[in-house]
Length: 233
Ligand code: 5RP
Image (cartoon, rainbow, N blue to C red):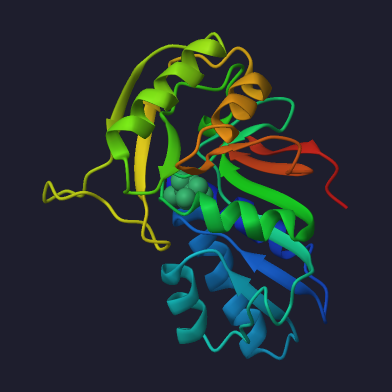
């Protein structure tokens, strides 16, 4: 089974959690894209839901599928958000932001009663950090903020190179919110809570990709079946 088939299987299981009338947060990335496609088919068949997207890309996909869309201003409380992740640990702590959408993803997930993660099981790790941690920063004062981020990382006991994220053409990647991303290549994050607190205290950091205590369930697909972390229903 291909990695894409596994992502689709996880998305299909998450779709079973959707009930008529639900207000949904729609994630970003290749796995979340499967969920939105499957949801679009259900909506076309008559399912009544109202959704908020976590990125311009997901918004465009959902609108093309005629999924009824709202905003967190009009619909500030959601029932369920389904989103992918770059890493998941056994305690349901996540790294997100590989698709540069973690700011909106975190706002939408926290506005939801539940966040369910969908992924293939290669995303499951014992210790977070193999995937570079995305840190969204304002463009103003970039170098000063980068140094403050490096100090915060060191203070939390982690270490590694910090790289400004670029587009394939070499230009600086700009997020949907007009910010830049610093990717921290840490290898291992032994104390995610300490690192999150240290990064939260840096002026210029808009949001980092550590999602701690936010997800209540992860659906992880492998060729031998689905593995569920946390509580699914
Ligand atoms: C985007 C994200 C994605 O959910 C994460 O990068 C996983 O993406 P994919 O499903 O394509 O592996 O956090 O900001």
